[in-house]
Image 1 (cartoon, rainbow, N blue to C red):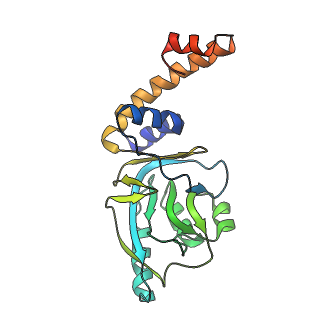
Image 2 (image 1 turned 30 degrees about the vertical axis):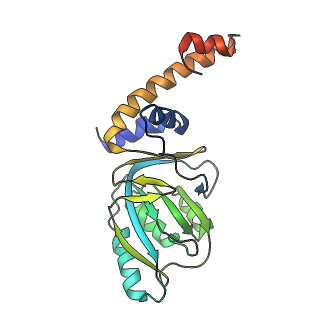
Length: 217
């Protein structure tokens, strides 16, 4: 299935339903930390993860640092979500020009277990961005990009390249790519059942009766 087709199906399912199915499959740690928040309420994103990893490094050569970062930004594929493991709590790892570059490449969004800056400009650009904090302090002279397209841990969750990232008003979920189709099929069935439960409850069915009838609530 194409990236666009999978994204369309995932966008039609809210993160709560996805986590319920992941729980049923025994994947109990796929929800990223609630401290990772959208820059603006209502932001959503969905796409395969393009994983990025770095660490603080005092005294790193500015030229060396920025060349690595810019090379990485140019490698993000269309339709993907840039997902950062920064191991940092002091600097901004994404700013306006980085966002312009990502949008020009068709990036679907960014999830940063770290910081961003130029918030007003980013909001004007329209890229969905979820981060742990904001700060004006740039990462380039104080942070080292270690690499990309490798397994990382973000918000307490192990994420491999190509795992699906889905973010909405409730939070961010990582769906392992190997089970994505299975999760989708089960989640779509769950949503259909919940629609029946909702209709029954609105018509006066008691909650326990609805649960006994449909097996869900």
